[in-house]
Image 1 (tube, rainbow, N blue to C red):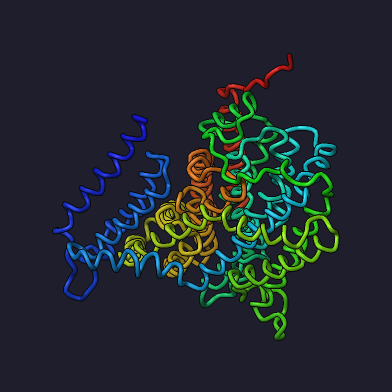
Image 2 (cartoon, rainbow, N blue to C red):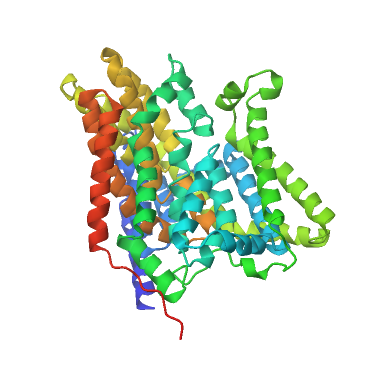
Length: 538
């Protein structure tokens, strides 16, 4: 109770401080805020991130972050603050067609998960997997493998892998925080090195004056953060240890059977509540239908059925439209399948509609605030601030530019919560910086991509981070605080690799050195780790 009271007073104190500071925030003569494109544009996301980590409460933290942005933008104009907060922030986020497509996909997937649980498909899959997968290590490798296979889109990856693997990982007392990390670490990192993915399409679109797809392919071996993250996953699972906050969660799951540590189950519809008559196909058929329909939906939105080839259709696709269309068709097919199988009745399928929405209410709310926070940062000129800083680099820094751009991209990704936004801001700048040294173009563009993914992993306001937690049924802050130390570890090693790549102009030596350093770090951390002890049967 005392801890809750202190958190509440901390938030109230911060709000009072912001209000008393209003008079110094005035609009400039041209209508832009006086603090436009200054370091103050970083304050709203930093406030939200700091509060989320300190208070462990994400809704109020994001609310205060968005409110901070509105205050910095409108100054002492109370009506202006409300208008910017509601109209330019929350309402604009919810009226954006791309965002609404993602929300539709989330809700439909929640409905599918509820149906799979009610039909007993999830329960049957758990029973089947228990006969094939005999250890925690095998369960984690299975999760990683499935995450690598679903490479077309990170949103789709996060929610699908979580829905399929929860019954299996729960059976082996793998904490939901660890499952969320396994999902998140194979979502964006796999998508950013997969030529056929929505991420490849996004990056290709930002590379003006070049063949974007060719640049993306050449950048893959330089994407040290993504490659080292996958390598770290394999090392952690193979060595069977965890460290920092993740060790606490895993120890509690193994020794006490508490998968959440916080005591809060995000998805209260548990797998063992389903029918005992379900079969594995009751889970696999909806998932496979969803995958096929979403891929078709994405290439449809890219003009595949209007004559575009498969690659170009992916490059031109609208992931939001494709996922919304595909998931809706997949839902209809699933309902028809269950009715024909007589696993669950039509009325029971319809009962899963509001249940799916209820399960996704939390991530939708967090996403809405995160999108609103991005709008606040954009209105304060965060992109222009970063662009101005980067453009000041001189020729003497050329060999260090990949490493410097990587760190800047990490910071921008953390502050904005979007890797794609980071690409859009920094890749054009990278092309301009390396115009005099074309041999540095690919390493620098790769640094933008790697840093964006790293920032995406570290940021509590990242949509991918939110969805990975939702897919795993994990408390959002729990996912963030357990993933941060792992992401920072890989970030540090990737930074060294980019320094080497900037001087040697070769990805292979830099990648090899990074792998050796990462392995040495993992061996050292394992030597310091405390191994959890499973309870013995009496």
